Structure formats: C-alpha cells, structure tokens
Image (cartoon, rainbow, N blue to C red):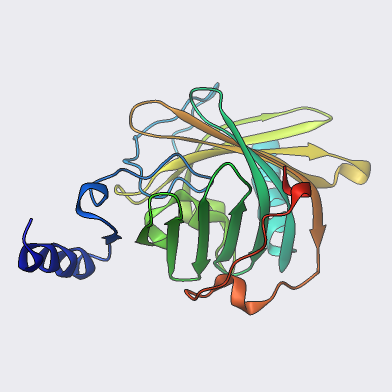
Length: 242
C-alpha cells in the first residue's frame, strides 16, 4: 500500500469517527473481545429467560427497574477489579475506574496489552501489543445506557428480561438504537435489599459472550482526570493486578 493510499484510508476512517492506527497489515485487525463491547457488530437479541413487549411491566418488574436506575444514579465514582472471560473461556484481569457521566477506564494486566478509556463522548481502545489505536463514539456501545447523567432504563433501553430472587437481580437490556447493542447486568442483593453490581455479559452478532465479573468495589473515591483523557498516561503493570 502506498503512503498516499494509507493516508487516504486514515482520513476516511476519521471522517466516520472510527480509525485504526498502526502498520498496514494490522490496520484491518478486528478489536479483541473487551469489557464494553466496543468495535463489535451487535445482535438484535441476547440470551434471556424472559421477554417483554417493551411497554408493560408488573409492579415487581417496574420496582426492580427503578431500583437499578437508583443504584447507578446514586454513584458518582466507582473503582475496582475486573475479570473478563471471553467465548473461549480465556480470562484477563485488571482494574477499572468509572466516573459519571460517561467516563471510564479499563486497565488490563499482563499478558494483555489492552487499555480502554472514555472521555464521555468517545471511547478509545489501545492495543500496545499490536500498536493500534481505535476510537468509537460512546453512544455506539450498550455501555452508554448505565453511564448517562440521569440513568433511565425505560427511556433509553428495551428490557428483554428480568430475573430476581431474595439474593440476586439480573436484567437484560437492548439499546433502542438499531446500531447499538445489548447486555445483561447482574446484581447481588444485600442488607436492606441494597444492590451491588457483580457482573455483566455482552453478546455480539455471532452469539459470543464476553463476561465481566467485578470485585473490590469502592465508591465515592475520585480518580485522576488524566485517566479519561487521550494522552500518554500509563499505570505500571503491578504484580497485584493479576
């Protein structure tokens, strides 16, 4: 590929809000499965044990949806550890930071070289192994549903299923936008019926699941603004990330 053609491809990619930077042979590499589903082609449905018509809910279901809204609207800062398991049962670990609205960072520990972060409008995937960088509109991922300034599931999503018990609550959501995707959120019920996020699963167009389990959660502790900005900022790869 000539230098002129390479430049032309990059310009076109920027015009559509999506660009992959790297060697020519790597430029067409598809993103690896990741914690927020960025870069995937989304399916119209996800695995769910129940289905709703998107308009009517019984009192228990409506109460559960409102409780999930309240959980996310009550958090400004969230951080913790995550374990990502892909469709081939491979697990990667790391730490994550979220700041509402719209900002997050997933810092993968070795052997992965992935880094994912969002400034509230765009998210970026950096693969330090392939030396590529990709940018996507945050609104193109289902993750945006729970990162809104005012989380309102009934306004922003189709509820495909709810399962709940005395100890657990899970909800399957599909973004109302045709070009976006879907996910299942799972919460533990604690004392006083309080919710704690424990995991989410994103399913792509091929029916492949990416599961994210979270632990060691902390709320109310602000992260450095540098974490969410497109600049040369790296955490050291510490042994306790593994």
